[in-house]
Length: 410
Image (tube, rainbow, N blue to C red; front, side):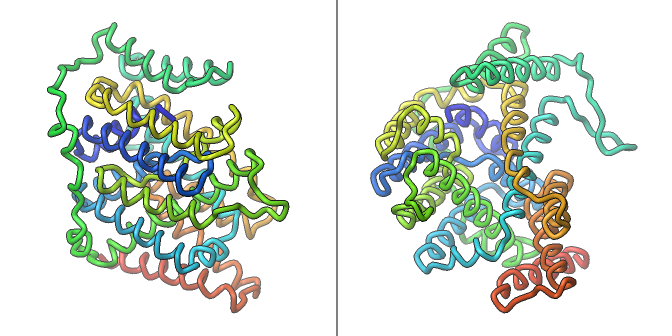
């Protein structure tokens, strides 16, 4: 999981956030959240700022919607509060049951494409083109060539099953950047003042008075943070506990509410520290593979993250060309759930494809969700398969349609 210490600041730094402070917030929130999970739920589940949601934070909320990053942090905090309330009230199960598993898989795959596209763009491998929208960049350019070299190295290490392949690849690519003069870094003073520039900088009142859409804009942002966090958490939880043999014969997960409460609290802790949504990491399965079966694995991971705060100022020395290969590979690994979609069934295939393709092409997880959920609800109506129990699905679809109408009129 250590690669997130370099990758998260590189993404949130593009939102105008101070890189060293984000690195410190990443280490702190991952450390506290993992220790909290280990102590309260006693499961080998570690947490850190989630991939995909950090990209949504930067490229959609801050850059496209022109929301200031402190206000965006306020939305992250509110999504954590909503997650907590939904868990305590038992509504979370209703939301999960309202969305078909195929759409859940499509969202994961769409976020994977989104992350990979960002990595390719940061690397200069894919560039803007006025005629075709995108085109192949100049691979002879130093940044692009360095990224390709880093990608080859990380893929090779991953294929050889070398532990820490992504972290090794990022560090090696950074070293190569230094060697060819592509990286220029001046050591900054190390102090709590510099590292604390994002701590408690969130603007919750600002989230309620967002320009343009006002409460509608805030609701959309909070909903996406919440929705992806819920499904990312559930998917990771099922995968890790299944591999660890912690599920009951009936498939139930012990201490489920404690796990979800810890995850919700982690998002609020992350927002207070100064980073995007903190969520459970599927990389926790590596700890399970090594023998972790209790919360002690999560606690040790958390302590190591806290120790890594000492290296936070050096996150600025890692160029985009070094983190781009990691984004591409993480995007590739996130495509696995797409295999769970029954592509021969139009009811699953059409909404799934729309979700999958619209997330990267519109640079918005919200748009992908909107197309997928609306298409699924429409197909159920056309096939006359709508049931009373589907009321939440159709409510979500109606809200998404209203969103499209509002956006068209704006």
